[in-house]
Image (cartoon, helix red, strand yellow):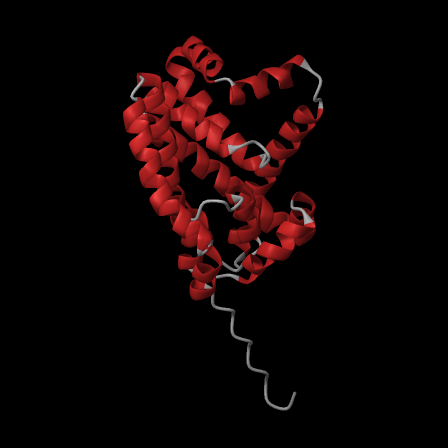
Length: 241
């Protein structure tokens, strides 16, 4: 890595860390009205919609910030916010806003993981998750990254930090993680839009289609990962060593 690249990564990750630390300290004040307000935004669709309407033309930026925040603070459920995007803005506009927010949050988490290293990331994940997904820190394949983000059931927000520890270039992670998130985010956005419009038959048909695709993917997830994951080859030793 060149000196200029290290400077750019350091600046980006430093700004990311400042955001993470500031938000973490704020969220740590769990009993304050501000935190209770934030939690209600994530769990009450009608309340979020009403609040966003008060922001007027700034509502999309507020929602994008909420989506990015739920990636950086991994315990916040992304399924809820993806649904809310379609519920508040409609299927396609909500999808676009969700993808922008998710991408920004993913890039921040990746940068923080790469800059702060293994010791920091291990504090974020449980020992069980580290044992199950620790192989990611050796991963370089774009297909593996795409499959992990495509398969339902994986902690996708924590994957961002883990891929930050891997040798994978940032641009590869950016493309493959975004592509992998897109189908699931579209489903959530479509569900939210149909719910807001009262199209319950469409919701039922969509859920049946999702189940037909997602259940086999989840059931055979370990086999799929074994097929696409290639362990890095050991580097040859220099003669005489």
